[in-house]
Length: 138
Image (cartoon, rainbow, N blue to C red; front, side, top):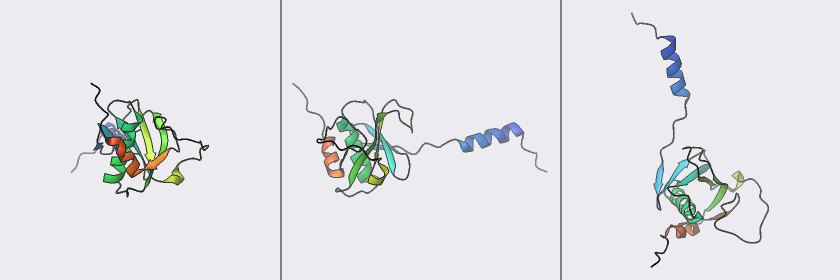
């Protein structure tokens, strides 16, 4: 005859099963990691939160190598720099390939790369050009 499970053990087991399991991280170039947030969104975390180039590079790597997006697909900023929802790190940027997922934003006359504001976008191929290492100064 089997021994009944204690209520404490049952409660702990239920709690463990209810906790979210972090998705496997994708490691990209320039020390970036990308994590899926939902079916249409992912976030990029950089080892050092510096230039926007690093985030665009990570988004391009993830879109191309994990999501199999074509070079012409557009990557959209869903949420600019802010706390990570997948790891708790201080700085992450959320992206999507689904233009419909981005709330409407006021149109601006020019694009500023370092802003990373919701609605900013570029093609996977354009974003990949930001993967080149920064120039070394003598």
